Length: 137
Image (cartoon, rainbow, N blue to C red; front, side):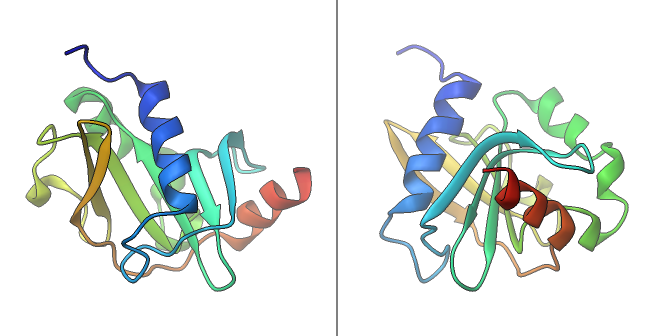
């Protein structure tokens, strides 16, 4: 079996975010944007919007890439980053649940299927950045 690529994870999670069966835990989002830069120079791999929340998914295919994420400048405050719900998606078992930041969730990808390994906790998202994305589409 070939290793999954970043692009595959992004595309699979974008499709999954629009319609999946775990919508009590992660809302289905009718509007999904892939890899667009905001006015704050944040690029979410995937961000989706439903009527009451936003869901951000960051795809990681290596441990060093996952660790580098924490050093990004927009992570200064909870509301400086997009997403009311924030998730990492990785190949299954690449990242341990205990290594995921406190309020972040974790999605695993295996055999063309996405499962929720850890549920995200609601956070205050950067509404200015989110609106800038919506207005550019």
